Length: 312
Figure (cartoon, rainbow, N blue to C red):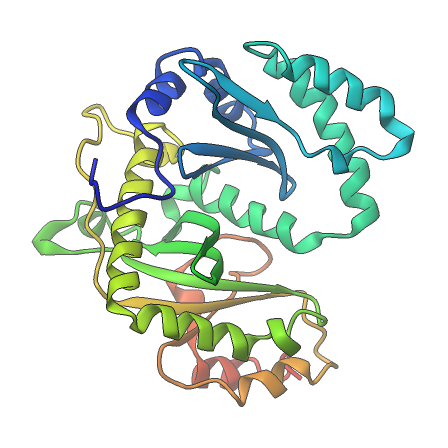
């Protein structure tokens, strides 16, 4: 493992326990349940359900782990479930089937009251493009979500790797390319301090910093390798195990995924006029859905031309 990478990577002991050892049942539970999504952090894993972090797992002493669920997800009405989850997680090795059954219900109640649709849509994008029945046909895989470092925060880090067989085989020196995607759900998220313009400036600053850029690319290469080795992208599994990371192109794209925008609103068009034409792409769906295809990724000018009636 590259010593330069100090984030979003599991150390060999944690990785081995997850793939072969005491945490293998947890990995199996997640891979058998497509409502759950495992994301790798710095020697830590977060498990998501409907976009909410349902389980946090990190080393706790020698050869043991700490399992945690945010207690804020438990309302006064399900205080009993909170106590039950505590008992389940306080074991050296929890019964994950029982835990997820109780914890999912708690998150269902919490997320319904909070109306946090953006994170849930985000997880659906991961599921569709990484491990659904059509994942092998899409042109993108999701390497990471909610990436955060030195003041930068990215909703989705996608890998553009077209489904054409010769490109999937990495022939003639082909290298897949990263795309940093900002996702916006509804009208309220489009403008202001967290709007498209501010995010574009932040991402551009990050990409143009050669040190941050290169370390980020290396980090994503090793993160993607660990996901391949854990079988978290089933369509890319092969008889001979992945050993070396796939090398990514030095160039990166900036993309925006706008979900459920109201065509009558002017907020989106007001943001679009502030964005630079270069290096700005918009990711749309092919009919209704969450699969990412090259045919549905447009530059700013083409996006405005094609979707004039929809963007306000």
